[in-house]
Image (cartoon, rainbow, N blue to C red; front, side):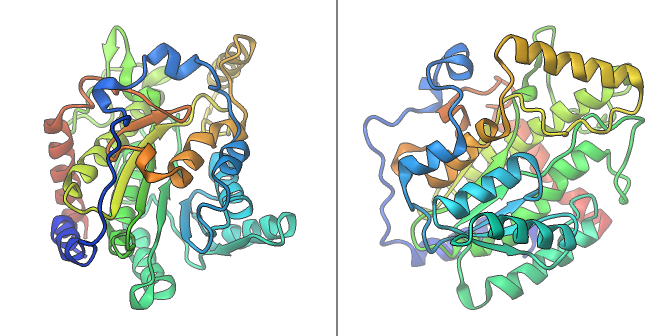
Length: 365
């Protein structure tokens, strides 16, 4: 599927799902009525565990198919475990290495014999455009032939804090390349399978509160300066990470707008909270490692650090909660809607990012 044809694919499926009526209850919160940020981040029940969230909804995904990227560790692995073991989903594990995916599926299956964990047998290396394009094509043919639907696509994989202006094999700044471009290509390629759902297809994209930047330097996405020139390398990697998470959020919002007339698919984004998952394992100097260790220690001392099961809660919520409790295009944390930064709520940056991403992929094909 050509990326520019997302709207066309959506319109083709919209007719076949016309019998489905989107439920919009009067109590549903809109982005303008999203929770106050302090309450959303720290309020009552902010630290629920993924398994408890899943138990609330019971086997809501029984006989449905969920695909999770980065399912071999951290939040992705816990998300996959809970959705398979508690919600009854068939969970496809997409990992950079097919061998690692196989090992993870074996581990989860041994822990939960009744769960259905399937290792995708193709490498899904988000740092390689060629690999993503080929693996997405193979996944569609292998797992979603003859109209089999992909009920939930969870774009979870990511990296952070990579130093020294690292790039992907295609020469793209590595945070932007892996966290955004890789998922942009992968999700759009698999979108026909999600659109094949009769009534409740979902795309869930893991973003972050780092999309906001800082009070003194609010984050904006300068597509002409992905390396953030002029910033000390002590902070450059994490600033680039924050901007890649901003790109995730902008992509989710624009995809939701593109699919607004398609009543059978919703798109959500989220912040999992501050979780020490090894995402910043690229700290390459004792100074950077000490800074990271101090950050997590301070967060833990102040009660802000989440465990991995707590960090996976909102992803599980968006995959399993009743659709009429959610809003397509909205951003969530702690299983609550939260207003984004003013910049991220604007349509222009999202449109510019989409166009830039399409042109970049076309150029590198």
